[in-house]
Image 1: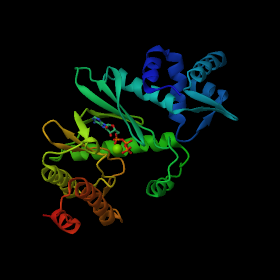
Image 2: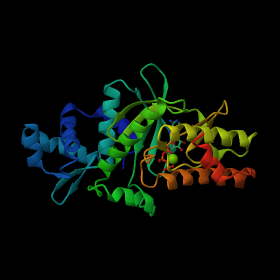
Image 3: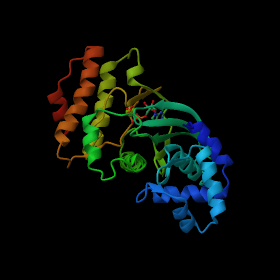
Length: 290
Ligand SMILES: Nc1ncnc2c1ncn2[C@@H]1O[C@H](COP(=O)(O)OP(=O)(O)OP(=O)(O)O)[C@@H](O)[C@H]1O
Ligand SMILES: [Mg+2]
């Protein structure tokens, strides 16, 4: 499977013919997971030989795969397509080192056209077979439960929309700039995950900073619902940044109270166990509305 770095060099190499054919796969994701040579010829108006030629290249680069009934787009094919959009529209110049490999995403560094640091998050839901019943249940609602590419595009849309909304508050949120298929371009936060901090000088102060972020989101009707020491970054000014919002829900969600209490409990548990703070879940919950 080509890495994101490989995909970035493929973006530079591919000719417009191959993109034309790749684009047909991308446009068909929603309705036809598998397409054959004849579909491509009729959608593209290209000669059979040219289609065969382009398919051979896409296959060789592992952007598509052959199946019994035709061909299907692979994650790397969607990566190349998403990257091409980002580069062609001047959102980023290229991609750099990995910033993090999460359970459900690959995050890489990038530089904008004016030299600013960016992070690009590529969704990878379905990469790991998971036993997380919460996520499983919410995914089952999606009719196309086997179409991971579509699920990843939807997740990127959800996170992007939440980031836009949260950014308009006083929260510390990585500014979102653009969504391309299953990827999001945002500001790169120069920080360290809370889980990686060996020690904190003033853990109580950091806890209340986290609490304040949760409170602002809550007042804005948004619950992260996957909050933990893994999704909080601490920067050089001791400011906290909550990342990872695709699974956020609004206060109208039927389990809203359960989810906000679980977020609070996760953070409280971390600070009580690691830093021996004395924190009370119920008073924190009451404090959200003040
Ligand atoms: N804007 C950013 N700036 C810098 N680093 C980031 C940014 N966004 C994400 N990261 C890094 O990438 C990692 C994965 O990101 P994120 O938590 O959003 O993805 P995930 O796959 O959903 O994670 P999880 O494993 O928690 O499910 C983070 O832990 C963090 O180290
Ligand atoms: Mg995360």
